[in-house]
Image (cartoon, rainbow, N blue to C red; front, side, top):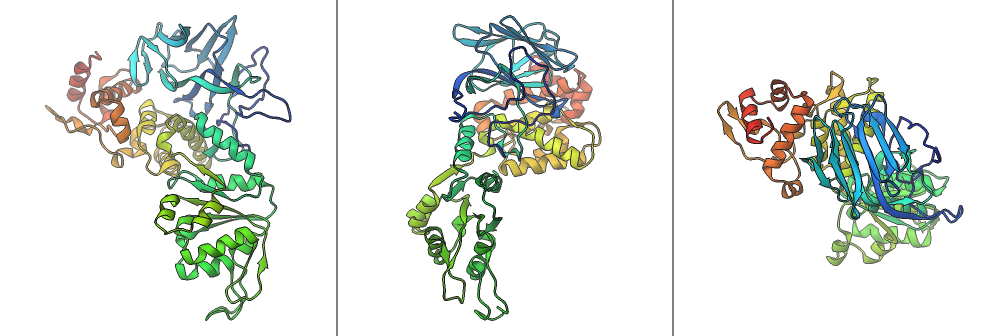
Length: 491
């Protein structure tokens, strides 16, 4: 498994003169090849085509360009014309000359040119906007992200398809800080030192642990243990094994999970739930590479690499004398903190695309499209269950979708996310039927009216401007929607 900055992709871009093909995008200096390390520069990433979620992502370097023209074309294509770049996307909702991005006094500016459906930057329809780091650009049903200073290998091509990773989606990221952590992880994975993975439930701690094992070149097994799921009176015997006759019911020798992981990796999940009485024994196994079975008298040698994980604050547990300080420092030689999904909003379209592709293949279904309204809900929902919850959500949507497009009703997020808008009674019933789900952090960034307007615009785009169809998508009456359209000046 390659722990590099990679994004799932199936469609190849046509060759660009002077660009190396088949190159992956990685953010680390390679001393063996002598390649120059990454340098921050302006970059545009085509993240997602809602109508073709499996089409993959494309990265465009902007530092040597005088402008980028974005518009509709019969196929996805990037073409250099002098110092200009022309990007075509087969999105019927985009105009042939939709928008242009060009440098101006040290910044990059997007200008809507001849579009019919408008250009949206960070949730606001605009004719001209100064782009900031991480700006989300919506043109038709296609999403781009602008990075003002994204680290890029100096020898990387100016236009490249971000190739798929060999493993699970935990390593697909558009977040430079998280990618730096993954690069460090890759560099240390082949060592013997213990590692501590911290993160909320559902962030993919076991995925990371398995990747560490795969990179370690250890020929033994990967043995996962959920310390919180084992009854306290059985933890010691399950971990370290027991001798025949050690206790009532011990009719045979039992090797234990530590012994099973010999020459491999022992993954101790929820290590914060390990009883204090056993923490000293784990510490001894780490430091002396030996342990004793229950009922045994002679120590047994073992060659095991320990990777631990927790969603608890172990520093606070140590301060409260609920956790051994010496074990904590022994485990945290190399700590890695997995950010929650709500802190990785730019990765949500990439992860959603990965899961759509996976479950369509698993269910033997044709490729499903993702409606802009559904994409918007995925991106603004709080995801308290993190990547695991997103995976479950997409799997459910793939099963429930009978047509060729995933809509918000297939996601069922409105029943779980906090509602931002208070009920607004109208002539034909409560306008509050429109789902304005989002995170509490999101509420601080947008006013309720902005969120409401965004939902209406997305529904109208999805319905091709048909007010009746948009009202059906939003599950409100025609008159209520017409009134809101007028209030927001969308006529």
